[in-house]
View 1 (tube, each protein chain N blue to C red):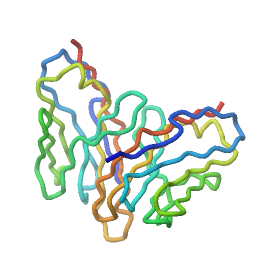
View 2: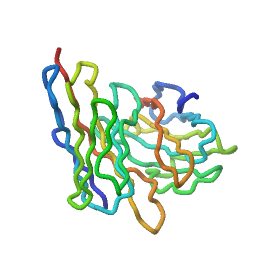
View 3: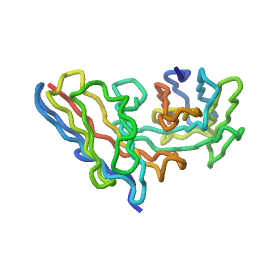
Length: 114
Length: 116
């Protein structure tokens, strides 16, 4: 079946704008994760969903970042009032459930804030 | 706080060589360790996952070992090919009773270049 998909693959925006990044997990995977990867670094955890609820959003850097998963499948990461420091690759991953935690990653969205 | 270090940061080898990438972690209370491959501008492809009770895993020309007590893992690539050129990342999943053991902690990766 299809893997994790993310759209858009690239997003260029201006400082202060609002952006939405979408993640479509593997069908049947109840757990979904967002990570952020800055240049030359490994990915860092942002938020974890189990089903529709955000079970852990402790990695979100500040209140400009928000994520939803209203129907327990597709998730959207929302960034308000973007700043240049938000430029990074945003990776989404999914796993079958909490216990079966092998995480499968999508191709990422490269966000550039000018 | 778990810290994951990968050495070397970059490695360039001629085609056909066998090579070893290293990963070390500070907290041995892990559930598993995963090796990923990342091509430029792409996402992560899982290569091997080693459970904490295992010592090694093999897939084709790849062999990953785990020494949990010393906080080390190695990824061995046999007979390297130019197509192996990529960044290799290791990540650990913590084992803890307080929840949050789904957060993978990544190293910064090793950039491998295999020259024809």
